[in-house]
Length: 496
Image (tube, rainbow, N blue to C red; front, side, top):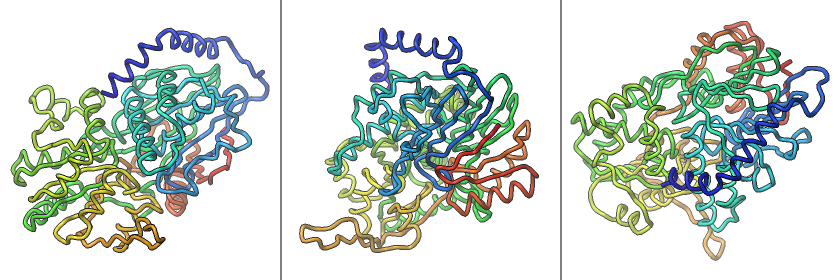
């Protein structure tokens, strides 16, 4: 449905879009407008430095002003948005926005730029355009449902779609007179990209890895490692600490199998809060594979929140999936996402039925950090019974309810009644975690650095908790003898 809606928006605005593309082309090819002086390149972190959430990196040259990602921190009220009030960032001077992937911590604030008057291009892959639109619209809906005023409307999301230019992997594109970009597979989620920027006439080459996975997953091929030229690399540290070595996949699969079997024996329900894109589809494929191979008895798997629609987008873009999944779909006539075990939950009435009906089931619902969406409703209903299970499958950010429960809290204040008395949720259900992640762990990050070619002279660490960024920067410097740094938000780095 979202793909049809996007096509309708583009079709209805085809005349406008033709003029917009023409104007964009003139900006790129009509030459410099700011006057060429000394050559330099700098980046400023407006968000996502020494933290996970609100990613926004501002690239400046004498001629160009480019924003890479513009996300929100869904787990924080006080640090929710990037520092778009920084003195160097002026929206009316912005030339282009480049989006690495669709998760809200990288895209959640992009429509707000259009609300504030931005009318320039947004570059990303096709799946990223579709999924980020869906997630942004869902965020507006959830904010309204919680009685909050949304920071933008569906009209602003439409405006973003009108100005989005989609690129294939490894397609070279000029975005300003002195910056040329190429997107490469990042292995993180469907359509996720690392952004290679060729700046000036060979002046500097920068790779923004954004979120990346340097290992083959059930869904995707590993991140790309070979580039024409490379002087600087920005790399994530979500799992960059020395202790962040994830268990083998087979071990994780066994844990999931045991949880399902044990919970079914107790006639309980298994709640798996997930990110709508990436982890949800990995979990779906894992459960489908277990049922298909007879490792567990067939069990209904209820899909709630954005997961169903985003999974349909995966089916629409099989060329972005790994060769095994494509082979399964095209040669073995088995699309794992179309298995009869999956059942859509499309309303609060259906949600109530799932909660109240007898028998065991698996519930896959957004949001993954329990910061809103249907997963919170299921938690409230299922938390009291020790027969039920809560399984965390993705990163839990500081401040989120998911992080507090995962770290051992079992009495959570979820609101207040009319008298101001706190409403406390007691979590008696079994709490487990499996590490199904689209991020590279410490071992994979070090392997990526060793394989990336050519070897960059400067490596900048971002997108990770403070200690993990510093630890990874120190370890890379010691092992590879290259300059490393872990800037803080609002710090600038001169690359050239």
